[in-house]
Image (cartoon, rainbow, N blue to C red; front, side, top):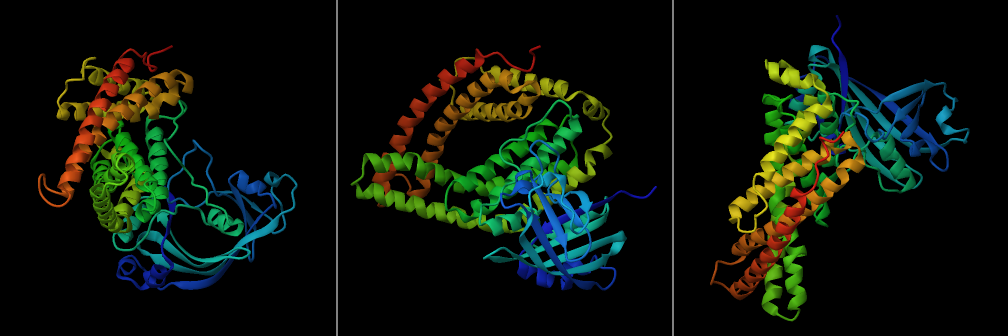
Length: 493
């Protein structure tokens, strides 16, 4: 039986594409000399973008048939990051797809460049696409690498290349990138927020669907996190990684092994780099802003804020090499390899195999019930918990929320809404209390207690944080009691 073939696509900077064919990383894989040919592509749509509105693109090469492509996969459908745009149909050079609804189609954008084909060892082939996208008034250089060949070899080869070459799964299909350029509009992300599972998928399929979703979200927000203009990029990247790690933990009874543990360790490394930047963003936007408003004319508070902003810039400076380096690339391609290869099947574990055969609702209900019992063990009276125990409870509540958020759609949005709302209130209240504790630690980084020109301002900030922590603790206790009284959704008929 012939081995299953796959293709993976990566984007890379145009400058890196110039040296990649001659680089050491590609030399290890090359089997013969390559050949280069010119490529010209045009994308067509109606003036009002009828195809783009459906997540479709009509691609017309200089010669040959048109291709109707999925440029934006529908929400809730399976999508593996790094997959080339799916082809729905091939049409004659002048044929119009039914999806155009009889609207006249016009050239919207084009690509002009060259494709270099490189035969690789193990029956693989690399196609390096280099050139420029062109709209009506704008142009931008682009480069893509497509690896194709045996399913067992291609993800491994992409992982190996990405150790040294700046290759990432594309955030956008080439057609969507061209559309945004031509219309001078913001590009549309493939995935946003939390994944949405349905009861029709199995346990394995649920893991791969959600994993692909969260990797896309992580990659989408990473550039904004590196830019650091606003706190949102780091926040959303961090949330995506937390959801991803929670997903891996949730599915360990069914899908586990060395490959997924490596993925978890890699994304944890990214999360660790994001943490300091997020902490300073939260302090400056929260307690720091409150201090500035309460004491607008106090020069010592102004100096404290300036020192905090310097710490924030230093945290972002340390973060950028992580997001531009091999760690993010390895995380993305490790996830893609897991989705494609499903390495957990090679683990000899009868219990895990049985869990994979279970109905997704049954698997989810067992997990949620176990986490809920563990969370509720704390009891209603949490006001007097020491900081360490309160922090541990906050982490458990966060994990409960991510799991409930992931699986709640299996029982219908309405059934889980009240529980998720109560859980969100608990997490928000716990988060405010934790922010105040973190803030006191951050102040110690600005000036040792009782020393330096910032000592007075640090003391004032610590006192402010302590008062806020007490208020937040009270609110957290109230929200916690309401959660314990809330009916769970996973054991309802």
